[in-house]
Amino acid sequence: MLGWARSAAADVPGISLQAGLGTGVGYASLAGAYRDDTIGGLRAGLGIGPYATLDFALAEDLDRVEAATGFGARVRLARGDCWRALWTPYVRGQVSLVGASHLGSNYDLLVGAGHWGRLAPRVAWFAELQVVTRVGEYDSVAARVEVGLAVTTLAFWRD
Image (cartoon, rainbow, N blue to C red):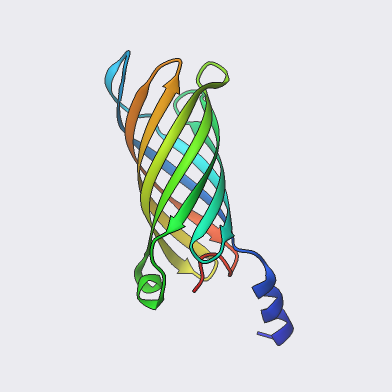
């Protein structure tokens, strides 16, 4: 790579764009135990140093209209050549406004732990276990699994 092109690529901030699908099981105060619907999600992340990321998230229930908009953060727990070769563990937290009857009628509190792995310099995969508590018109708690792909700048979560 040319020297000027290499330095220009290094000046681009760490950004990730993710798309994922998830589902799980839960318990609602009114309905009891249930199988959670499939959720499709998009996240844009801005890397803050080598360990942290601020996220903006959009999600939609694929079985009914129930949009969510959220903000959160991811924190990478380890870095280095041995981790990068296999995967990078991280934890994540997020608060979302959810539109069950209207946007903001409920909110979700999400905590998760996941694996982040590189497929190519700008392409990554992720798998995440989540616990989501919904508060609002009805209360519920769900355990979910989400998997997906991400496109990143070269600076995102690099050592």
